[in-house]
Image 1 (cartoon, rainbow, N blue to C red):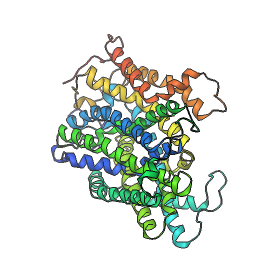
Image 2: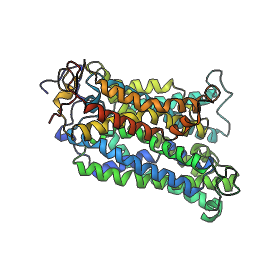
Image 3: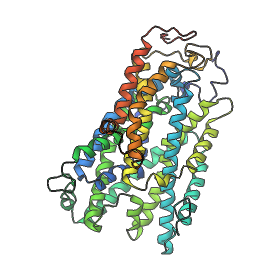
Length: 493
């Protein structure tokens, strides 16, 4: 590219060439199956059972949330398939050649958090497996500051080290890994569901477990107060991938392949895994008298070869999902911060080390913290970025981008010194309404009296962020530009 500068370009961030565009629809479908059949997804649906929902209520929340998130997934995936650029480059069109580093950094940090969570889950699987073989509790007494046992810390570090082996591998290895392991993971889930149905005495006892929100239930009259925040969390769960889906669609053989593959892979598979998860969790209520929402802990209650098989599948699944869903995007995003010095591999190492120090076990201490603080919280941060991307590409530019300009410091996306102030205003406008609600949920002891309205707004955090930022950005970009050097009205072909 003639005008590409080293400050904006390296080989990892360059538009994908014709020889790289070899992902067909079944590759995208397999990618989604590989990412969906994972412990965090299982815990997401299972956690709703612990919150008091029935099996059908929990499944409906998950399925509806993923039908909703499919829309921005396809809209943001379109420019990736058409122009072959990753998210960290695409975002320059709306935020500016320098300003694009801000949303890229935000997305990368969320990915680091997820990377840490997945690593913790994998370490727990290893520790549980070792404890069963040795017939002893390997966790140990809680350590000061960390709050976890020495065994848990060692297992976490060991699994973290195992994943470093994949840092040197590229996107092709990830595609192959997901394509070949996806069917095996589906079979493992079906096997676990079969065990649950058999142990619970059939499907009847599972679905007969009443909702806590039913008349005479423990949470009678509170259904919508739990359902709506849960729906927002479901949308926010894949709101991360909705942003960086161009990192994958840039390798699509055609636009049809990415649309068909995602449509067949995301909502149907998410609905199936949610149903299996909630049925199994509901069965644990019948079998053990309590809802066990963590599949690692559930596997530890089994006996015989099922334990070994289940925990091996969990460990392999965690590696493949973590690399695909978290390492790829953050590696690209970190590379975009300084393309001259940071490669894809270096960005991957940044992700691994930041995830190491985020103490992810704190986020999984309860379903409330996992679903309403972590998922809804980062949805409030990333939702506005999604709204700005959709508004810029579809409403402002009519799907037209100047690809070379995305790598040119003095090109059409320079705006004012490399920053599009209008995008920053829209981002702030999208985040601001959700901040009081986040503080109230995360720190109830200090922010318990902020007002009823803020909690209601936070209930719809991702939706509020997307719609407010989309509207503000589209409106501002239609105003005449008065800033020197700003070219907000440019519609490059």
